Image 1: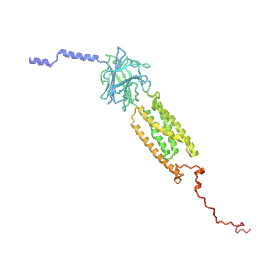
Image 2: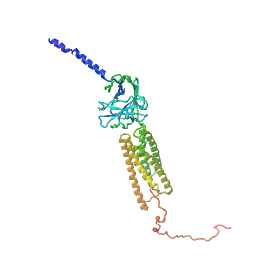
Image 3: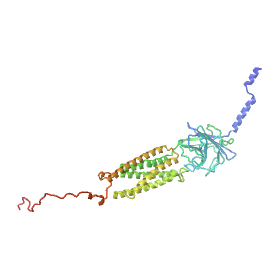
Image 4: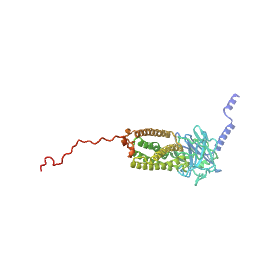
Length: 438
């Protein structure tokens, strides 16, 4: 009897085995079919899965990526132009994500497409530094100017990209500005496979299925933006203050003029580059930000400053005196340099860059101008003392100011009369020179 019980306990009933097998089959059949792209790169975590509902216009997709990136995106199309892109970034709540459907018009920041009806599904968020986006779109089969998903295609083109890892967006707005990508690539996807089963958000998987990568990811960097910042910051924080030092401390008017004219040319070049870059981003395309408005004003003010400097120099060479252009030139220059330094800070904030490097540059700017102010005050005090005491006047000093030639400036009355003319010379009678016998 015991042996029969032991044998019965050693093997489960046949009905239980069939129940388990049936449950597994039902789970497999019920699981949504999907095509999945897994980035074939060591150390990377970037997955995109797509499911197409063949009975409606809905599509379901899942994006998984490391949350150290400021944003991640996947787009349906061979290139950015006219491509529908799904852009995800951190929301104000660090545990949530914002999903923004956008359409790109070229190699510019894609614009939010309010006509695309897309919703986040349960399971979306940021956990353990991982982006997870589960979404459903009810009208993503066609968009824009002829863009569409070819449901009978075995190799539908897709692109992907992600933003810098040095900053986060932290916004609930679907129109938030995103910085230029630092990496991008492309792949093809089998949409026939994606529509083969039931509809729904794809399962979490890291298995490459129904897709093929097109080459490796390409590294990218916004070099022009860095050049713009370097030109403008270097001019307003270093070059123009150095130009002032050349005049106020070293007393080299010619070098001062060269530095200021060269700085003006650099600002015009950097400003032109900034105008060109403005068309690449949605926020700056309309030229309504404070940084852009102040920048355009500064370009005009620097041209005016150069004209004032020329007029001041021409008048000083002719009269050796200050003219009506002197004070406007001095104060106009101070305002321009200060406004340029402030606008640099606004530019760093607009670009979403760290302000640490700018603060270091601003410290250099402050030290330079403090040095200029202290040395200039000392020279001015010495000049005033020289004017009040004629014995301290040195005509060879660059700060020496020649007095007027008017009589009231020359105190002749305070001097004694010169001594009377005296001579021991006695006139001799006229005659032939000695030795002349003719």
